[in-house]
Length: 84
Image (cartoon, helix red, strand yellow):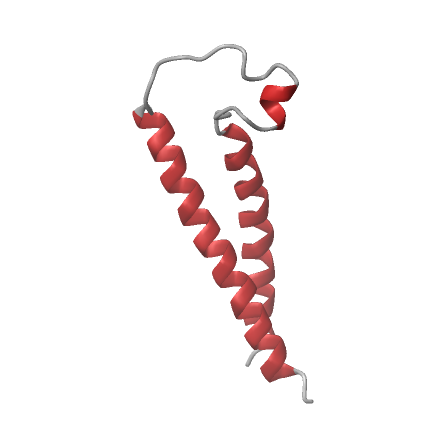
């Protein structure tokens, strides 16, 4: 396999890692975890999820799938590129 494939996967992996971290930090805490232990779960807003929260969930799952595919692709590329 060409080396440009590995470089493309590395760049895509870096971008999706940063994006996934930002998307996860944007989620609202559900309570019961460390955030509620330090006072983050004091106020509860509207019951149910808003459209924005559902879209954030979808984007997080999509970016997570792309991130996982990059990990698998790099692993397969390394297995084929480096002789045993």
